[in-house]
Image (cartoon, rainbow, N blue to C red):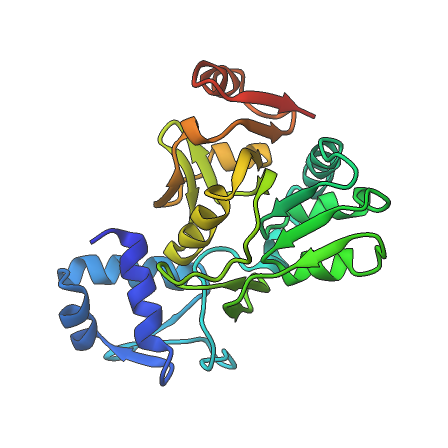
Length: 257
């Protein structure tokens, strides 16, 4: 079982009461005690759990009533590399044609497109409540939402894999972010995000990835898609030359801002 899947199951076990025992984790994960200790240490270092005698619990004041996502919470990631994200968002918005329909996946970089979409008369399908709030003042922008549960860490609406939650919608372009990107493909921190993004990819003619250059230096375990499914990557000028060349060699159009 992959680390990302083990983490997802740990949070599922924590959700009902906010506590899970080591013994329950050993049975549920079918993993060695050493592997479970490493998983819990990693989650504790990230501030997502607290290790206690006999098991682990959620941090004090943590809401256990709703679904949770692994990865960096939106409120924390929005401040990271903000100037680069703003430049990337502006460049992505310039690709939109007035009056067309587009899909914008939730994320702190895709959010930066919103100020530049006013006046284009777009129809936007998004799963992000942050993006909805940013687009609401734009009277000419029509907004569509999927069904599903609200994940508060990202303020995003997601449905489990295998559950059809999207409106009947097809778009020339999908703008999406990522937790990481490498030669193996585009990655996210949580399997639920992967399932949601696959549904968006299947509805798009062109997939445009918006990532600041730090995403090339990080790794996240769950692959959304290979580079062969990405048409364009928009990133900032701090991207390493060898990384840029690797993307071009893979047939990806690279835009550096």
